[in-house]
Amino acid sequence: MNNFEIKTVEFVRGIVGTNDILEDPTPQIAFVGRSNVGKSSLINSLVGRNDLARSSSKPGKTTEINFFLVNDAYYFVDLPGYGFAKISQKQREKLRKLIIWYLGYGEVKPKKVVLIIDANVGLKPFDLEMIDLLKKEGHDFLIVANKVDKIKSSKLEKQKREILSQVGQDFELVFYSSKTGKGKNDVLKGIFG
Image (cartoon, rainbow, N blue to C red):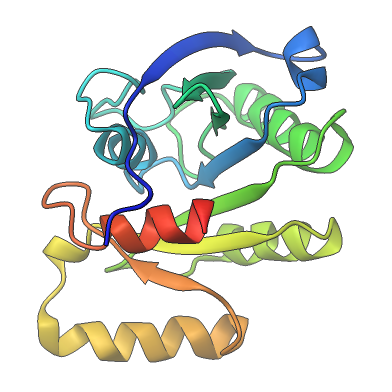
């Protein structure tokens, strides 16, 4: 069943602070994750384009909040990566504040937040901090464990148990592969369903 097909997508704008787009009533789906979890690749994979969200072999390329209009009905909001980006401490702190501002103090509340983690690595301290922030702000969120194609099937169940033991069994967790598309419909259902 594929009721959640993405037919159109276009880049609208990138922002680094207050902007009229935040007051647009179009529902926003925010994507957030550490700098090296494949966030841009995941967005590109979901929308069926290779060139929409900028991905790079060097983590930390997204330095603003990018808005993409999907099916003329939703914004996909690509937040900067947090954590290990090889940038200065000052720039890292600036990006962290931008993410917290959008999720905590921005003019809008996203309809859904997609927290992307690395399936092979699991939850890191920065991810747990992000989960605490999302809970505190009352955001509806989905955890997507990306790069599942790089994990052995024997380790998959163990990773799932480990992640759920850290966040609680009632959380929505989807294992996904940007490379193969495995889990795509589950992610889209989690976003739009």
